Image 1 (spheres, rainbow over the protein chains, first blue to last red):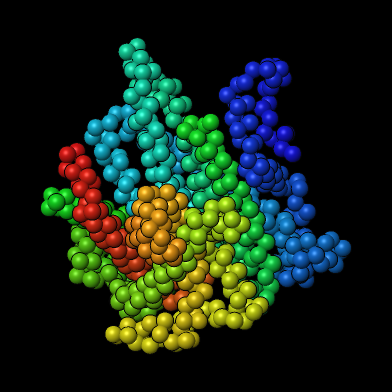
Image 2 (image 1 turned 120 degrees about the horizontal axis):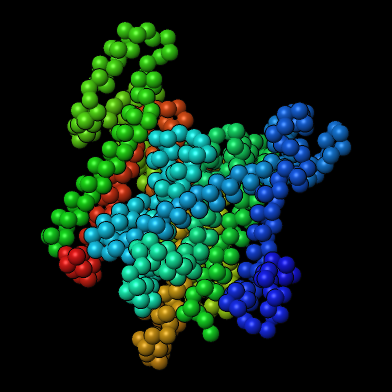
Length: 307
Length: 325
């Protein structure tokens, strides 16, 4: 059912006879049906988030089209002009389907953005530690160890208590809370790769440090990095939602899934469950599918598990 | 051994100093403390008086030295909201947080170990697969959302349990605790389960992995060959051997429980430190924020120090490799 997603794009030229590493990777990945399903769901979620302005039934933040008279409608009820609110509306009369689609866009955006920046910083630092070794390594890894002894949510909370709310600020907080995971992963695999012959050969050719590190060492450290990157991105999305729910993350002008859930919290005690429930389901589906994809990637990319 | 402890102690002090510096810079350079202290209607003379009295006319290193000097003596300023010493307010909230964290820890052990051992003994049964699927959910579900759903189901829809607060408390050795009264227990139950959920999933995985490894060991086979009852094999021979990693990880994760109690306390309006910091951030109560951050850093540094020292006692390789490098 997932051919469109998992089959490699440049296949026709090779006529399918030769097994390229990418093809083997795809075949291994598709062995798990749950993971394939998760990938399909994830791709769908990403598409929905990217295409939000075009596929969302209404623009939830266009004040002209939102009517307070439609507020707190149950899932499946109709508005006065005949549109159906499949997941109901929130306190201000916004359609929840649209709010969730836009919320996904913000949640995914913040998660992916902070994941990418943390990955770049962590990778650079981890590679430096492994390649140069000695004092540099000891110092960097000591900092990483100390940081990892504090839970990520605590570091993010401390930073946000100081910095205040904002998209840029929560990305900074998430990057600082997460770079150390990447650094540790990259260093571990780079230490193994570093002692292999191709690095020695590159050094004998008197290539520059930059070239050896980025052209030779880095590509061979990628597999574990991809796995950690997937799982940390899921973690970043969850952290952002938590912090926004606590009221220290995103400002009210950037309604991510966490803020939507937080808004619904006020109506929860009067029994209006759907305002918190559905954004939470969207968040859950996103996080679970990313985690499942990450788990499968770990199994596929780990050479020790190869038959 | 002594060398190792001294090294770790110096490192811990360094971490506390660096964190205090970050917090100090964050509060005094990024934010403007005068803006927080002086009302909008104050004229220039009043502003200058406040600046003088807070020592803000001095260079930053003298300000920092004063801050540290005050902190060492337990003076972290007065709360704007409560008008009392910030440190005192936080210390008053510590027992509630600790009670919640300990209850969650207890649940993780009481629920997690039996479920994990069962899943490890019968890896292919339907029950085990359900448990493992549940533990994956436990890892992925955002804590705050689960808390909300708990409130919705058990407090709003079914009306079985209260949704907010600590309930009746009684004093135990001068500290108010909830778990000794029926009302307090009913208030404690939902937040504790909520906080424990992640740890239960983790203990299930650890116990399952441990069990699967241990059941194939010779001493289990021997115990069975000796004709011991299944009950005795599992409860005595197996349990003892899977407890080591479980206890280690739970000890390490206790700090995590305290950190995550921020979320649970906010959802269930549990009057602990976590709720206090969120309230203080909302109301810009800077002295309390600073005091909380310093105390939480101190708590973590102490936990980490204890864990490191205990480890080095249990496993000499740790301290030997350290001293060599």
